[in-house]
Length: 192
Image (cartoon, rainbow, N blue to C red; front, side):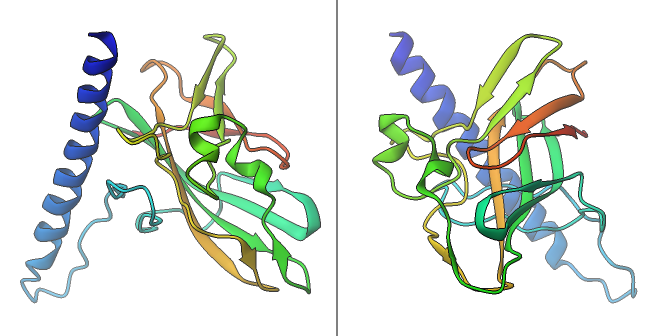
């Protein structure tokens, strides 16, 4: 019964995320012609976890820059707490070298369920040192990680918008450490 409840809860979170994303998208389409830009909103992930979220409303200065191997650079541009009880981390994965680089398979982590679903950022974690907890990337009901998937090689200078969703730490926790295998870790601030 516990597994069924967890699967239903995850399905509900994904459905809520999609519904909020659609509502925000529809609200943004009503351009009244007044010349004002719509306010930026937190981006929602897609239910299938295969596409990066939009990069709206993010600061020009990244929250953190993590260096990886072979010239890879991960810039964290936002970490937003959502009402559904999760945190969405957005960023850009960039090849800062002068040659094509294969993104290491290790970034997906080593959990069997995530490895089965191909290349992803499923190995990412948030560390709440105050609460002494580690938060792993969420998964949908089919075990696919709720993160950018389906990438392998970045050409020289190429950048890829990425996202990862995690369970939210307690409300009072605003600073966590972000970790991704083969990259340095860095503290980030959660907003929202």
